[in-house]
Image 1 (tube, protein in one colour):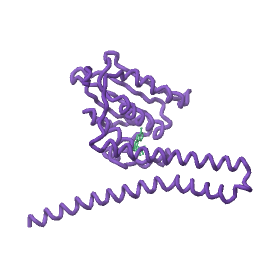
Image 2: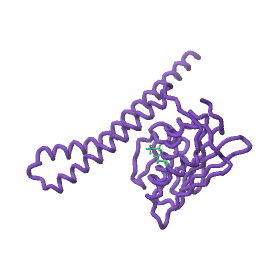
Image 3: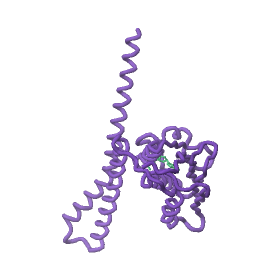
Image 4: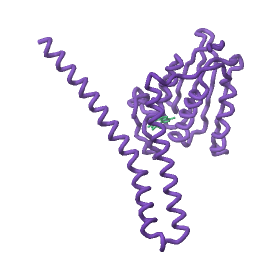
Length: 250
Ligand code: ADP
């Protein structure tokens, strides 16, 4: 009976949304609980035993409290950022900017984190590209997320390369961020841009909330651009396209 079929489809749709909400609450609670438990435990010990604890131990406990408060802060900021971007009210603030200058400046601090003998962080920039219109704060967030992911999830990379070229045929800017780390398994690849999707990263031990790439995609789409994860045998490569608009629209 057709009416019956429609009814069944509706129910499964609601169940999917319900399951996503449950996963969301479970993931967020789990991520928040670990640092909170650590902060609570050390703070309670400090209150109860402060008279007897050696000064160095107190300093170590306070350090743990500060580090975990910082971790909580990052998690909450990421969540707020995602909800702001996904709400229609938050728009990008574009103006004419130099992507080359932005990238050269933002890569500097990452170079300090390289294992100098074995790792290279390379920028290749097509000199034909002059200034064009984009939101510098948001585009920096995009590259920060992708490069930070390289350091987190491919910590033994030998090359992390950012390249930007002008695609004449389509009048687009094409940016790639590529590492030669362990890559993303084919079964996970179609899902990495989904909210809260995480790949089992037991190899690197780093666990995030699974929202970095969701943020990245949302920013790129707000610029009328595209992002893809390229299938390859070696490492991970993200390809971004941005429209090349070189007049100030404001
Ligand atoms: P998070 O916000 O938790 O860091 P992301 O949305 O940025 O998560 O990434 C989703 C998943 O994709 C991560 O759990 C990670 O395992 C995987 N991933 C992202 N970038 C890389 C990379 N450069 N190399 C290997 N795995 C990656």
